[in-house]
Every structure is written in C-alpha cells, then in structure tokens.
Amino acid sequence: MPEKSKTDKREARKKAVALRYDQAKDTAPKVVAKGAGLLAERLIALAQEHHIPIHENSDLTEVLSRLDLNAEIPPATYVLVAEILAFVYRTNQRFTR
Image 1 (cartoon, rainbow, N blue to C red):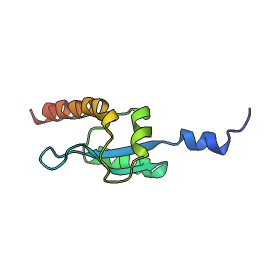
Image 2: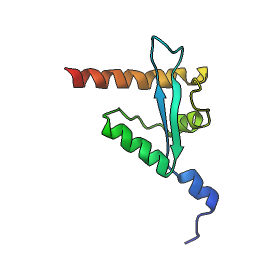
Image 3: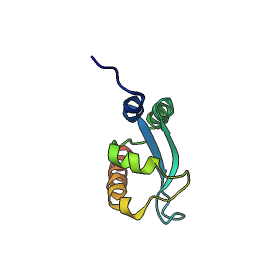
C-alpha cells in the first residue's frame, strides 16, 4: 500500500476553532482559539470538560482556522455560524430546564 505524503497527513490532521460571541460587546463572533493536531485535540477536550457544546463542520473549520486570533468571523460565514449558535442556545436551554 502506498505511503501517504506529508501533505496528505497534514490535510488529515484534526483542526478545531473556538468562537466567542457576547451580544452586548461584539458585533460578530470572534475566533478565540484555534489549532491543529494535538492542540485541536486539547481544545476539544477542554470544551468537553467544561460542557461547551461542540459542532463539527470541517468546511467551516477550515475557513475559520485561517483567521487571526480575536478576528471577527467574515460575513460570508454568518449564516453557518448563526445555525451553530442556535444549536448551542437550544442545547443550553435543555440543560438548564
């Protein structure tokens, strides 16, 4: 079986992006953490430890991982991120009832 190239291995690495959105302070969600490989795994583990909902979307993660830290998400991603935030709010409501 052929060995995967370094490029293939990098593309297959897990990525994670953490967003923060405070309606009172922010005009749009911001990237507050991001990483690939072991760092992505650590971000996911921290989210799980703190009961922060996780949503998987590799295409969106790819776009957001290219942004600088503390950068607002681009307008082109608003609809997707809004759907994720709605998922998070619904999840939070279920846990608080």
